[in-house]
Image (cartoon, rainbow, N blue to C red; front, side, top):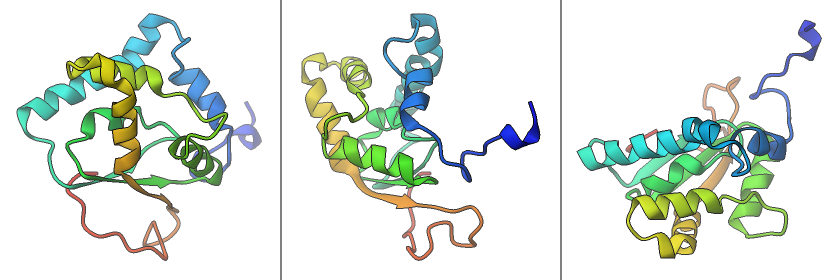
Length: 158
């Protein structure tokens, strides 16, 4: 592979749907999904039970338009999502607005609701995550303040 074909998430744009399909789509083989989605969700719920993860505001700095890890964290009142590229911001906003062609995170909402003991209310779980995402903010590693011109207030968890 030549160095000219390398891409960096925080610099180069990419197709969010491809990332979703490659790593988190429900059509992936079960063993793979267990490692990428289900295991991290189970472990997050375990940490929540311990009481070590708590607060009002959580800042999410994750790769791409992936929000599956936010579903267990609805003990936080506010989520602030930091994104590096415009395409991911648009895809997340599309999901927030329930627009046609938005990424389908229902499999995560169903699993999360089941883990919480209320599998019939997975739509409510999805709405709960949408309600808690207060901001989707562009960030840039090349700036001293990653979110310039926005100044973030203190958060309880990153």
